[in-house]
Image (cartoon, rainbow, N blue to C red; front, top):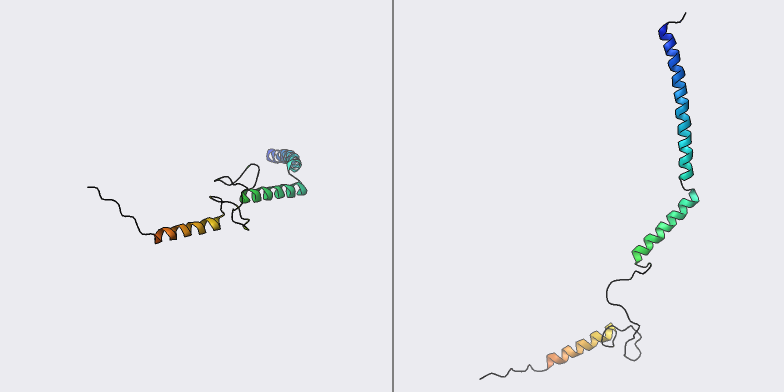
Length: 120
């Protein structure tokens, strides 16, 4: 005849086996649900491609309605004949505007300074 310990031990084995079966079935159903919600390999590649494209747009500053800060650009061209560069200031491109400034500064430096009239 079996002792109480042996009976209890056998019953515990049956409960453990039943509990293990329940845990396994729950784990399988959770794993199946997770597999359904995860993107497929192809969907993941498409997402990765879209993220790279967005990162490229952010780096380059191009995007929907984005522009660099500062003064708005015009479509005017330099007034110097033969120069097709875009206008910067006073009708000239940067190159011709700076050349004109240098000429004006050189002319101003070569003129004698005016003496202020003394008040009496």
